[in-house]
Amino acid sequence: MARGSTRPTSRDVAQAAGVSQAAVSLVLGGKWRGRVSEPTAERVRRAARELGYRPNLAARNLRLGRTRTVLLVVPALTTEFFAGVYTGAARVAAEHGFGVVLYPSPEGIGPARDPFASAQAALDGVLASSMAADALTAIRGDQLPLVMLDSDPAGSLGAATVNLDIADGVRQVAAHLLGLGHRRFLHLAADVPSWTFRVRARELAARLGAVPGTELRTARAPLSIEGALAATEAALAGAGAARPTAVVCDDDKLAAGAYKALRRLGLRVPDDVSVTGLDDLALATAIDPELTTVRLDAELFGERGMRALLAVLEGRAPEAGDIPVDLVVRGSTAPPR
Image (cartoon, rainbow, N blue to C red; front, side):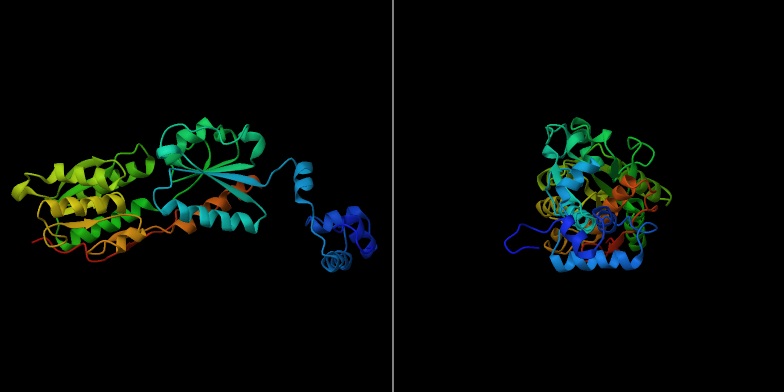
């Protein structure tokens, strides 16, 4: 290539390797097997390396009719959990030459403004949390290749689903508290109409209901520390001797609110009341005593979700099976007095 010329082209690579431009396209596009010999393919790759050739992805994508961009639709980013989901998804996407646009739904619920003039024209696919399903419908993302996170496999708009094994996480919490001797429970439930929270409520009721002599009350709260504080205070005030000895919270933020309510009522964690969470956010080790909670691997969740979407785009079946979760026992649980 002459000195002072612009960036090398596929024609330059073809001339350096002594092959046609079509052969260069086949080799660098990964479609050469059975059409170009191995020595010729290696000659093309070597010429591209030596010339510093980089394919024009924008032009290539226009020819293919693809933008290599996917949309990740999540609730409002009020915790680091969905930041972890994004990190995992973006890492896998980058490995495959895709970019990820993060789109949080306002307040985590309700419809949202379309982030594109035409989502269908601007995107190859969508990865969405069930907690942001209304936003997904509003931007017509349900009409694109789609994978749903934390969603009912039987009712997710016909899309593939990727789930954490939340039911097993609740089973582990119930077994831990029952093993400590607890029989009176308060479920501090997230007041969010989402499949993942319905699973928590159903599994907890089933596990505790199978043990004679257990009592389960439910208090609903917004997904906020202030909402959890108010709901816990209202549920426990005046309970007296019938007070629950364990509070099972749908997530760590609700558990932090429960802590504040218990202190206001003059109760100690875990001496008077044990508390559990779910998520294992940084918050879980910032409160005192540190919180017994279920660890969810958010980055792995995002990775699995993106791999599933790539499989859908390629016409393959995504990996089956829920992602395992683990109970992390810390200082917020103890036998009842």
